[in-house]
Amino acid sequence: MRFAPVAAALSLAFATTASIGQASDYEADPRAVALVAEGNAALEMGETQAAIDAFEAALAIDPGYTDVYLDLASAARIEGLQGKAIHFYREAQERDPENLAAITGEGEALVEKGALSAARENLTRLQDLCGETCTETVQLAAAIDRGPPVMTAEAVPSDEDIVQN
Image (cartoon, rainbow, N blue to C red; front, top):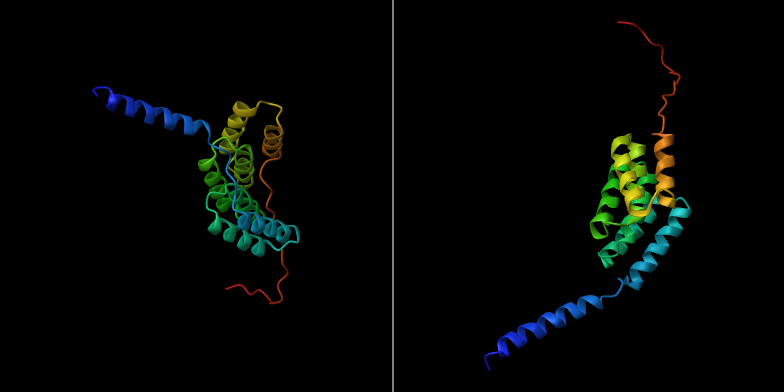
């Protein structure tokens, strides 16, 4: 009788640790998977806003589906919204801190934004996680070597006469 509480506590502890070992990989909702496929098809056809709408709908159905954040980030980068893309990549990393695609994508978006020192930090993380020769490390290193895109200004001819004050 004196050992009953201890035995109950031990059995609860063993049951909890046993269930942790049996955790399976996350399975996304099939409706969300279908919406992501629809969004990727729209993205391939150049319909970025339709793709974003499909990705956001998939996220509403299954908020735990981490890959949707990567797709949203890709669409944001196509739209030239690197800050928004960085936000989505960081959301993916919060859910999966060792997501190589999210770290790489964030690094590339940082390069596009001109934040090379932050991109180099991502490169260091990738090197620590997967080594010098993994695809993601090589891809980000190449993006850093290319540097941010150069913005040029175009001279637009004016139809109106310019008069000095």
